Amino acid sequence: MSITTAFIAELIRAANEVERLTPYEISRLLDHSVDTIREMRRQTGIAGSHCAGDVVIDLQVASARARDLLPAETRDVLLDAADVIRTFKIVVADEE
Image 1 (spheres, rainbow, N blue to C red):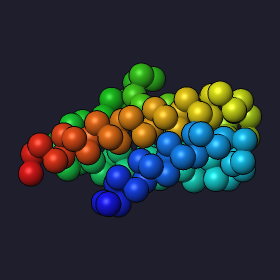
Image 2 (cartoon, rainbow, N blue to C red):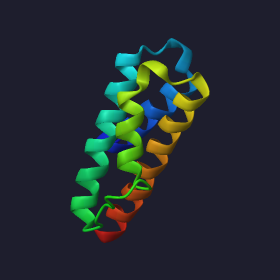
Image 3 (cartoon, one colour):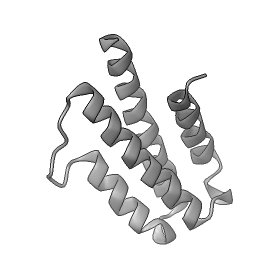
């Protein structure tokens, strides 16, 4: 299992157990997601957007508000991060 695949699984597992996560753990997962997405964007040459609709910005905001997120919001943002990373993983694999 690749590091990326393991991280996607970790995000999905965390989304299914949001009640057990501390705000620090949520923030750590979201920050790692941001770093992973930025690296995958660099690898694929896909530029990010600097507007409010960019997933990286959404993840950064969610990370900053981790303490205030409702469990459903936490689950949704973790699953969104997993989905974006999974999509980039497919793109990267197709380019290789």
